[in-house]
Length: 379
Image (cartoon, rainbow, N blue to C red; front, side):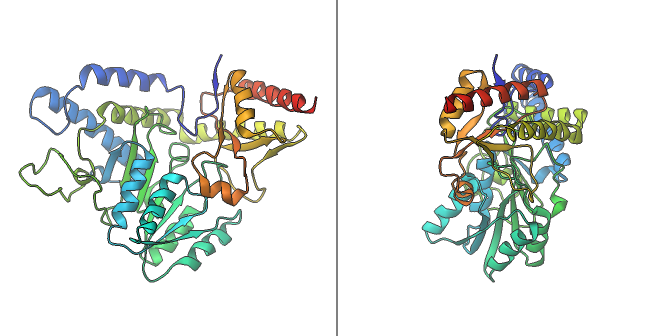
């Protein structure tokens, strides 16, 4: 039987209500939202807008400022390239996923912007100070993951948001690893929140969100049909149309809305407490296995993600052995070059990321095979 501990990549299984919502959307919402006045188009538009309202309310935003995207990477690219369209200086953290780091680096290589990387520490004050030191008169944006997708380390985003507010800098936050587990709101100092719909929000793959407070203009990086102002050859300036060109993922949006309702029914605090409990048990058991290293600092705060290595066994070999025995964990560099460089994990790590559907018994089964793997190395 397959046991999924790779929920930081995408949650699986999906809640029954989400699966039913997807099937219902396929059956009933076959029109093109915002494009047509006939019954099928109108019914589809209503379902799409309902999902938008649900997501907006969840993050403390206005529906018109809540944009559906393909994934968090899509959202981050739109935010970074859109806000930095006129140039300037951008700061990213040393824990950024490639979805934030690569667009920033690409702009810098083209000399469209200048870029700095703020070092992240276990100590919150040192982290905030590392961002503060890099701020210049031309700094236009700070990009910061709310939690590392490699280790789960939580960054002091409220303090960083306040720093940005004082200096009138756009704060772009990557919430892929925390949304749905922690109560994240724009009122926490975030100007643009980018997140995945298919991770902690329990929607299907191919879904993401860009949620903005509307303070900073986001120049569109894609232009096309929006269902509005169709006689103009210029992209509409109003949100969400300006950032939602082409036929949207109606089915995906509906599942994100249903995933949010699932979170509310279970209770976000309950979901987080369950996942944290599984992580604590896993870490406690690993501590008893000689040679297993967990990538956590005792002074840091962490979301329910655990990166580890088993002795000198490569992360890929360790994950392959665990896969052969029915466990899904991700190995390697997790699309996070900066994070692994900062951590010094030259061979990457194995990542454990539970969901609300995992059990302590499954964790103990995994521990057994980690022990077995270590014993095989020693024999």
